[in-house]
Amino acid sequence: MAKKDIKSISYEELSDWIQKNNYKKFRADQIFSWLHEKNVVSFGQMKNVSKQIIQQLNTEFYINNIKIQKKLVSSIDDTVKYLCMLEDGECIESVVMEYAFGKTICISSQVGCKMGCSFCASGKAGYIRNLTTSEMLDQLYISQRDLNCSIGNIVLMGIGEPLDNYDNFIKFVKNVSDPKGRNLGLRHITVSTCGLVDKIDRLANENIPINLSISLHAPNDMIRKSIMPIAKKWSIDQLLSACRRYIEKTNRRITFEYACIDSVNVLDKHAIELAGRLKGMLCHVNLIPVNSISEESFKETENIQLNRFFDILKNKRIPVTIRRTLGQDINASCGQLRGNYLDV
Ligand code: SAH
Image 1 (spheres, rainbow, N blue to C red):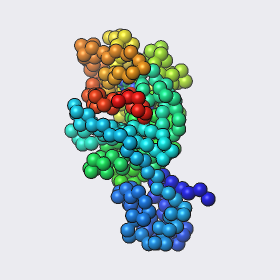
Image 2 (cartoon, rainbow, N blue to C red):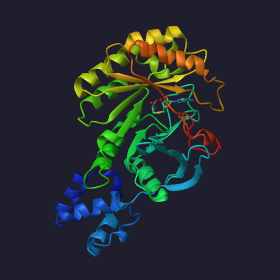
Image 3 (tube, helix red, strand yellow):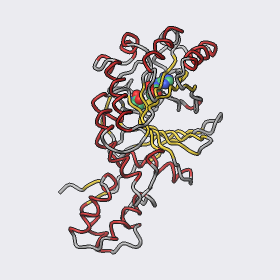
Image 4 (cartoon, helix red, strand yellow):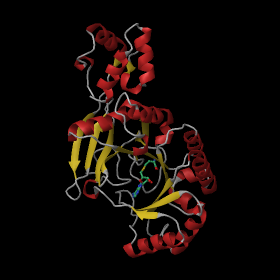
């Protein structure tokens, strides 16, 4: 029988296993806490768990561990980027950022990415595989251990499209927020998607109040299709309709991310068109100055144009902010993660 990845199973599944084997119910609490609060790397470290249970755990399960391969610290803003190696030798990156409200970790959800957005480094080497639930959790756990602190906010904005790895992403959210383990508040978790309409509808029905960000990046289909292949599958109207359904169902505000790319999507008329589409929606627009990646010659928008774009949206009563760029000197900014050694 193949061993099971124990950090990828839920508290309920662990509890069922404990009861099926006639152990006392509280054993599940102990084991779940060792895994998700104390982050042990082997069953032998579970000091208050009996030898017999540890032996059985060892025969039926394994603890997946990812390893820090390289750590870079920004000299500008103390952002930390980790390059981590997975058990099969694949690599991913995670970033820990410091905000006024505390530390936030940006987590990867896949090795590589299928989505092929032209401005993003994460998919340039193609797609390899989904991350497991435990590989997503481990990015948090090893960063907390390495920095010797608790990280209270998670954004699924690293490498990959989280909604393309839907089941593992949902299990990740459930495990990391489980009161028996890490107990991280759902409102401190944000998932970002390039716009998988069917999955946005599924998420609306999960009844998990996390934050949703949509990578919109364009005011119309023509521009969106020219930079994001996913726009050929779902039109901007279909995407925004799904967002409206999501808001209707969850009563939660959606953030639209908009990477400002000179000569592509930042003219005054684009701001006016965008404002028209988002009018009346419970939303917020986050303007991101585009970050450079080695494969593309996208130009960052001049501040003056970025501010004009901002002002147009603001005057049209669309809540808008400009995102502060962190970790630029270590290629840790939006769209710069790739998970190989090419970048720094
Ligand atoms: N696949 C998901 C998760 C990635 S989140 C998504 O698309 O939302 C990473 C965010 O950074 C996305 O909004 C992405 O569009 C944005 N991004 C990608 N490349 C960028 C770049 N070069 N400059 C600024 N933002 C970028």
